[in-house]
Length: 206
Image (cartoon, rainbow, N blue to C red; front, side, top):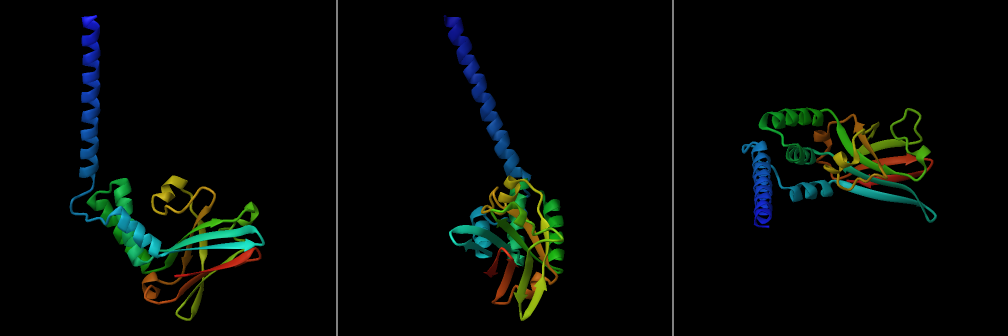
């Protein structure tokens, strides 16, 4: 009986030491994986930035929801916040962070991008990215209108939610690109994106 108790005690001690050690290693790895020279904003700050650049519209036909659209305008501020969030999620080192930041800034000089989480109950109407789509997407800013090009985002829902927490598995994720540099338009007070077609029309004001 004494031998049994001794073995049981030793087993518990070994398991305790193993999990304690694993916890220390895990914490150390997470802490050391991101370079101290990278100053990241907090996750709550990131969510605040994202929220201030996100709009939602629900369109109804009678009692039925015909379209639900949530979109984020990726301004310079949003892009910078997203870099920090990606660095936190994927434990980027300083070199990776710098490379991605340069790519992002180059993109901002060429185009304006919106992330769009789109839902419609009719599957055949969920075709924003197709050549023969039912929909047209416009950006109105500074007295000019730009037509967008849409691409379906092929990532897991969980991956997308790491950046856009409001997205859900019932909606389809899209990237909508307009041929105007976001750096040239983000100072305007009125920026409108419109999604319109036979099913319905929604204008989001940023």
